[in-house]
Image (cartoon, rainbow, N blue to C red; front, side, top):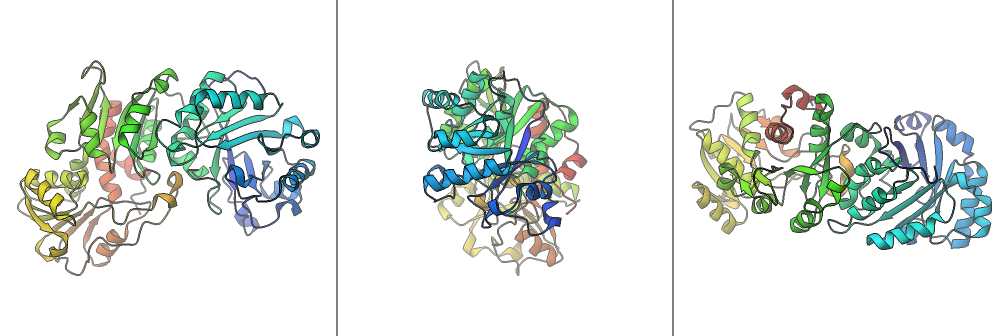
Length: 522
């Protein structure tokens, strides 16, 4: 692979990182079929892997190639052995017959180790703090002086924009023997763009044990949500920005629609700690257009919906009324410099599922719990359908201000009497999956906390939960157990995404396809 000119790979090689040994032969058979390489993370495994004959491991892995990694604590791994002992184990792994051995550029390049680990076995790696482009390039040049099968450079991304550095290096190098992306939640999307810039491998978790690194998606999510290992031609990027976004089902929904309708686009998860940093350092950066991958649309989720409205050159009357936007689309006709227009499709997320279930809202008493952008959108949706709406919020000052702006009644959450309302919309984060538990979107349970007690719900009432997970939330389950109608947050996501999909692509996302992608049959 050394020195080969890079082009976007048609098919990426998936490496499944094994951090916990399967308990049985049947469990070994559940390793992701799409992964061509299994990484044995010996620094994280409880069982001593070197005592396992490589041929037995290879047999258990159905003949896949094997990568041995003993990541040092200095580079974020779990190996606390002395440097000398660590090198002995790396040499033993190479001699035992592992196809690849991960050797660290900062501590393993001794003549003895290089004599015993053949160039074709060497995966020369570096993991560390955020880097400037010049520093990362110099680091690569030092690494490239040592012949290896693959060179891997993984700086951390702690704030938006730092994840562009390894991608810019990849694009500039134009080689197929370099893997570079950023670690951490903000770096998740860089893992997915890297193979578009020549990186031939993508790492994913197996689902056995925890991920090998923060922000590492499962191989299942890489395939299901992003279409890997195949690499469809793409001409533009879209995505969802929020904090957190690792649990978001939007990439699965939009990318599934792109594949079905042959839209040359890729939808990515953008984790941001500050919307301003993301906007200046990623959206307005020249990096993505220079890669031939312009970012042309964003879904916006909590806590950035107010900020999204503020950065747009133009916005719809509905977004202005709500005071928040969940959709940003680049439109050259709006403004010569920025060209971003803001829209609010959240109201459709509430009204659409209710209409589909035949729930008439005209004249019904409804309460919306939560005064953020999603809650304000729900108020507008219910009012437009003729409901008599009250807004409830834990923070009284913010809630009263939002209620006055929207010209509806207000009640403090502590004083809320659910028996007075036949439609209840939950629009707070309570019940959302924990971000740390959902790297890349694999199936995780949602938070079991309830936003309010259910005993006072009136007979025949309807509850809409704007929170969603891979399975129904505790609120949705509890309402259904009482024999009442509950609208799953995944249905809300689907109905608000229909207009987003149309605005971003100019095509219609079939409703039944969306239901299949979001597993709304369960």
